Image (cartoon, rainbow, N blue to C red; front, side, top):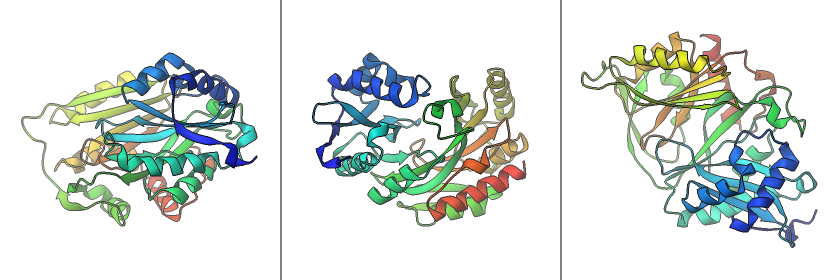
Length: 330
């Protein structure tokens, strides 16, 4: 397919029906991000800048490729590029390369975005390669078994749950101090080596701040069987509050639980050890996730689908070794 006939630009409201049709053709009704199937929701999210889609079209304005920039972290300046789809007939036309190149051109002028990241799936390496070829992204984390196999049933590209690689790029620098948990000191040193923004490092040995009360926001994605817990504050009541929240989550038949913690806390080592003792393991670093950097911890209820994690960058392969090592020790 000749890619020169294809055009790429930001979403227009008249694209909404074509986006829904594209995802239905590629994924059936199984794609976890249900917004793509609902034109009204797509238009509303675009208008308030929560979701900024990029669309690739044929000369007759048929939508054959899609990805989007959307808010995906507690800090509103952190945007993810994800929710990608390419019509089968155009899989070899460089559609994702066009989208990445467009993002690279447009990012400097997008004042909403301070930190940008991609979350390419690991059941194949094509999107990982396209991202690295087009953008100065840096791998910082791996989300194990994030996506359900059912999402890939129609295209027959996965026989089990699918992991994703997190690749970040700093748009607006935010130097700050990171408190390094002793339990993951070597892991975190490796991830920050070569990072594209400045950080200063301090050990984490303090006790909880006496006046802080734990505050956790939880999102549960039933179709993906994933729960995400954003820990905004962590005090001496953390274990009690956390275990109560986890009990509620596990009653919802989830397969994956993620916990986001702040690396700006001097007591982050205490939290990391507590979670590790509860069956959670290292996922990686989340730059500017809370305005300041975050730590990803994760628990998989079933044995992870390690065999189908395919990674292109050597750095990502090392991160996977760190993640798997920690899983084996839980």
